[in-house]
Amino acid sequence: RLILRATEREALMKHYEEKRYTERVAIERIEAESRAQADDMVVAEVPFTILLNGVEVATLLCYPSALTFLAAGYLFSEGFVDAGTDLSEIVVNEKGCYVQVTAKGTVRLPHGNLTGRLVISGCGQCRVPLMQGVGNGLPAPVSSDLRMDHRVLIEMMNQFQESSAVFRDTGAVHSCAICDRRALGYQADDIGRHNALDKVVGWSFLNGIDREDKVLLITGRASSEMVLKTVRAGIPVLVSRSAATSLGVSLAEHLGCTLIGFARGGRMNIYSHGFRVG
Amino acid sequence: RLILRATEREALMKHYEEKRYTERVAIERIEAESRAQADDMVVAEVPFTILLNGVEVATLLCYPSALTFLAAGYLFSEGFVDAGTDLSEIVVNEKGCYVQVTAKGTVRLPHGNLTGRLVISGCGQCRVPLMQGVGNGLPAPVSSDLRMDHRVLIEMMNQFQESSAVFRDTGAVHSCAICDRRALGYQADDIGRHNALDKVVGWSFLNGIDREDKVLLITGRASSEMVLKTVRAGIPVLVSRSAATSLGVSLAEHLGCTLIGFARGGRMNIYSHGFRVG
Image (cartoon, rainbow over all chains, first blue to last red; front, side):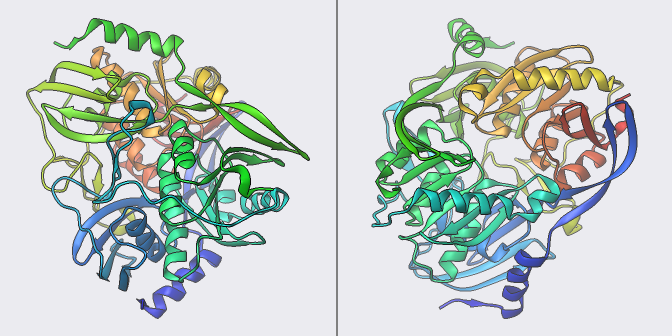
């Protein structure tokens, strides 16, 4: 179904493996009583504009890896397209920092003053559990027979957290990875935790990967938007290295998602639907 | 100029001092080989809708402290109002999670498919240094005679990082504080680093505080948006506990802002305009 321009796709796949988008900058470093000229590596941050069927949908500030996946994942996560939508062409212009996506089938373009940002008009605390994305409400609850061994999960979290070279170089990115009950799969980095997740979801979407037996690992906080994106992708388990928020927990509970936080150093907190982790 | 409803203002001021918006949730904790029922504290996350002169401007997902300041700071940081705009009334409805702001003078309401999100159509890397907020371009460069001793800055960063009770309880918030060359001032927490900064800027705005001799301290990464918000507020120095990004550094350089990263444990990296720190 999908036509990726072959050279760009290869380039993007290689980028994840080989290329680090960093810049060396001249700094002054103060340490104890010394002050010295030094070099430092900073992570690249670029604006990236997504056009869907010729309409400007959003401009994301992002780390410029895996832009094809970011575009697809963002459009899907935010409800502009569905899993069944035919993304017939995705052409990334790296120099111009934009992507043109051609889609057939279900396409929801922004109108009025709605953009790709999820607009939430209520929550548990407000007693008005109504959420509005672009033309769609809460995603359907996730259903999955997945069962996982917590020791495998702990081992994968350890691997996951050690594998981002960009993080080691710059300390400035979040990561997201997808895994099944046995092994770690595709992993992406970004300066934004939402973008990192969208890249992984976009990867799974463009590669026709089943998601109902998968798990997402993230370094950033599990807030409401992270849970919603996970559930919308049909992924039953979200595991964070850091904390969860109240709205994240209540949405995960409501939507059948296993939410795990503080998964590091051999421990984890299970906030909802713990039956999937044995 | 400004009329805050007194009870709400008092309540909000007290909230920062006394109230922590957290929820106790039942979890399962896995640690070594044990799995046990336990309690955990999670930080409150709520959607908060901002109406400006009756028009819905944005819905933020936020930590519900200092909502008056968040509303004012967001409207100012994102260019909906200017420093000279008369915010004649700010009425927070905490139960409904929304705020109604009445403003006179310069007011830029969203139109078309623009929302409060900063839309950036170019950057250094793209060689098109054009940025568009809501009707405004890049902020004017910051100018200030402020000079600071780096030892005072290090001491304030230490205090700042130890003073968030919500972070100690939940590990899930970012903080922002304002200080002058001698002492730490108002501090705010939020689940989003942008919101925490907006709360502090809103506080300074509503209290008529001079900003050209102040410094912002943040726990989160210094990306382009954080630098832009700092400069737009007229604050000459931004100090982060964590990393800076390439676009953050180049904007700070261009806009006369002293940008400092990795300020912790007695050290710091100065990325731009280091003359203000002695």
